[in-house]
Length: 65
Image (cartoon, rainbow, N blue to C red; front, side):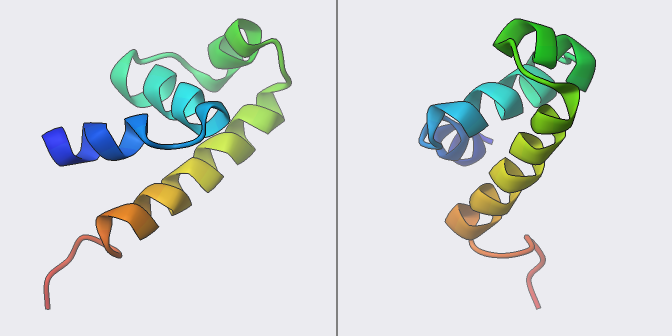
C-alpha cells in the first residue's frame, strides 16, 4: 500500500488532489468539486485521468499472469 500512496503523491497536483480526496478521505465527486472550486464533471475527468496515470506508474492492470 505504501507504493500506491507514494504513486498518488507523485501525481501532478490536480490529479493527486482529486484521487486523494476521493479514495483516502472518502469525499464524493460533488464534494470534491466544491472543495476544488470546479465542476463535478471535471472531477470525474480528473479521477479517470489520475487512475490512468497511476496504472502507468504502478505497471499495468495489477494482475500477474
